[in-house]
Image 1 (cartoon, rainbow over the protein chains, first blue to last red):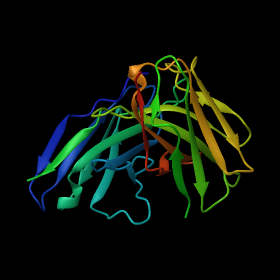
Image 2: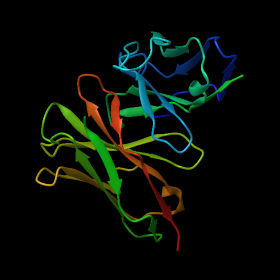
Image 3: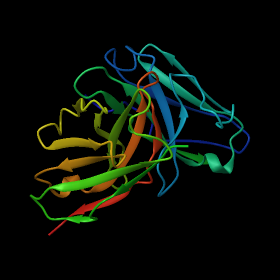
Image 4: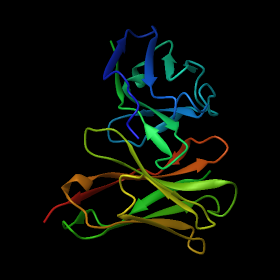
Length: 111
Length: 120
């Protein structure tokens, strides 16, 4: 099971929006609505930001939104803030053998 | 609020076995439809799922690590453990434990992570 593909980097000015893609296959992202997104600050553990493609856990601001089309999922962060500067990883349930796959990660910079 | 905390040796010699424990606090490891997972992250690299265990004892492993990984769980101590045998420098990473809700298939919460270095 190969890692999901994310762009290495993305950036946006404070207050603007940034969208990160996560491309998998018909055996993972395309097969299940179990895509989740995690934000990771340096030296810290990842934090769940989106689950089941577009649902937000309690406490996550509505600036974070998710979507999926075919084998590609996306995370949009609106109204970028300094605290949003971090690495972002997607993950998908893959259903067999290696049950969960992660994305390659995207470093988001707030200009 | 459930919290997870990894513990174990920070240095392991090549060819030996890496052993880590994840202590669960703030809730019972036996409650709910959860699986208990291990994930690792080499320095500067991405995340890799290692495996999961249910309180029933059922396990699933990453196919690339399956021959070297063993997960176990101790309900009396509210903790679960990872053993990775025949380690090499490629196994050097920060190891995280995390809970997965089977209905949502997402990792939440996570432990803070523990760095394991494989070196002689």
